[in-house]
Amino acid sequence: MRKIIYLLTIISLTALYGCHKEHSIPSKYVYSKDSLKIFPDYKNIIIPANIAPMNFQIIGDAKEVLAEVCAGDINLVITANSRNEIIFEEKVWKQLIKNEHGKGINIHIFTKGEKEWIRYEDFKMDVASPIDRYLSYRLIEPGYELYRQMGLYQRDLESFEVKTIYENNQVQNTENNHCVNCHNFQNYSTDRMLFHVRSAHGGTVIYNKGKIEKMNLKNDSILGPAVYPTWHPKMNRIVFSSNMTGQSFHMLSKEKVEVVDSESDLIYYDADRKSIRNIFKTKSCLETFPCWNPEGNKLYYSAAYLPQLDTISDKQAYAFFLNHFKEIKYDIMSIDFDPEKEIFSNPQVVVNCSAEEKSAVVPRVSPKGDFLLYTKGDYGQFHIWHKSADLWVKNLRTGEEYALAEANSNDVDSYHSWSSNGKWIAFSSRRDDGNFTRIYLTYFDRKGQAHKAFMIPQERPSDNTLLLKSYNVPELTKEALKCDENAFRQVIYNKDAQNVQYSNR
Image (cartoon, rainbow, N blue to C red):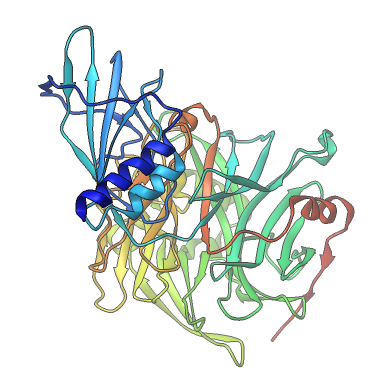
């Protein structure tokens, strides 16, 4: 029976590869003493059961490259293209994942130089739980003060399809130039989502179950613009931080830029009543990066306490931040929320990083509420520019705090989000060249440990090196966005932002 199944598998694969030249592994070869170099580094990783083909490129001067790929009863040989890329056909890849039977996908690489064939140490891709199908992100040129073109996009992780959510430069007129940022979804669903438009046609664009509105969340009683959002998991309520940020540039440093947050508060927006109010309004405490827990009865956020800000002028404060930016340390805080009365109370320190002269930002709670994920660095709050930035977790049941060592690198590992099943973490990293952020995935197991992180696959492995833009704010959702980009554009360009009421309650 096993022989019949194997024969049928080979026949089906031959049908799929019918247009390809047949190849077989060489009968004679020598083993390499050197480690195989591939890009992206997909050696010995754990991948989702529904991920797109993990295409990769062999780095080196080989004249010919063959890959023997084994999964369960499937055994096939793939020849690399002229760029030494191993490209899996989507139908074949899906069969490989489906038939790995808990033993993973084993890959054996053979290369040929001028004379003999060389076999490298085998590697494998183990297959684990599926990941949410859709990943949304922003693409932006790695500029500092100016921008030309940027957009929000949604990638289907089961294929290579990318949908544009919104791009800012469809009307070629400098008066229409604007920034788009800080997209957010409610509880892994695309029924509700938002993003900000800055400068021309400014406002917060809110998509609410088929209806699009552009809101002006600025108010004389609010510190400044609404910035980092978090949508309540069950209610039509959004918490934002309100930040006054600016950039400073280093003259002698490996770091390029420091983003200074001179003032920040937390604000609460009632999207049904279109009213807004302060949760905190303090000068000496900088609150930012809010995040709800899954039950919606607790809000996490980052905060830095600087009592000296209460006694100095705004001009002096600016000089203080420029001269003491490395001394600013953020802790992770939480505050209780009563969903019926819609009131906050009982602020508490959750991660006391300032006590160890470190800084923790961007808290994110796992879907079951048992782990708090955050980015830890040496100082400040905009860790995307800090090479010290690493991913950390706190076990909220035991209190243990530790780095996700297997996922981290020697460069920036920053903005992150959970999958809806809590098994995967998507995050941005600059580990490849130190300049451009790319999106990486890491498997988070039942013991609370991360595994070797890997770059999201592309149709061509070189796509990520040829793309001269950075990814940021990766957010996972279960389904695709239901709104067309033209519908967003009509509202952004043709409607004024609606004002909101300030509430004192």
